[in-house]
Image (cartoon, rainbow, N blue to C red; front, side):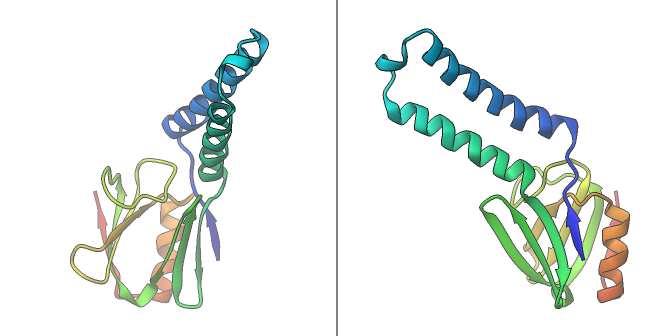
Length: 144
């Protein structure tokens, strides 16, 4: 089963706002005929930044299949064995660490060793947890 990532206003503002500023500065440089004075690599870097941000914004999703939780957020991707998941902390935000997510108040998934955790933000935390519990009923759910 595939789950899209929820996008909150803060994340949307940061990602789309930054993309807009990069487009605006490049366009303004071209319009004001300062294009010749700006090295081409600066425009290429702006374009790469825009593509990268939009890739994360539109390309973040999670999938539960074949005993694995697969996550992808732009270039960040990984897999976790569902049977290795120990606990899920619900409706909390992880500010440091691996975060293939586009919203706050998501899920912190602890798995494997004591310190292994990943933060995700599925469209519906409750539905995602229900599907995980069907696959591994030993997962401990903590609500914050």
